[in-house]
Image (cartoon, rainbow, N blue to C red; front, side, top):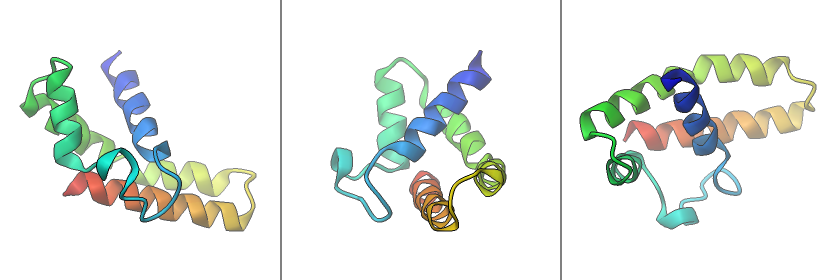
Amino acid sequence: MIFLSERLFFVKCICIGSGVGDTQYIGGYNRSSFVDAMEMSGVEGKYANKVIDKMVTYKEKWYDIIGKSFLSEKLKEAYFLLLENRINRLKI
């Protein structure tokens, strides 16, 4: 169940915002804002950081899924850029 929750949280992280460089959405979220949100939800900061670290490791899986999709090359590239942007925010 935790694994599923982590995946869903990661999907939300990737899908939030309207595009690459969209730092104004939800006040410009980053790793610390996600940790704060998770702590307010009752998750310890130490565990929240572990969850985020694990989500960042899913990057290659997401690239593989996007690469094998039926999306146009233009949309694939847009998703790759969006994914990279979101992961970089979580690494901070």
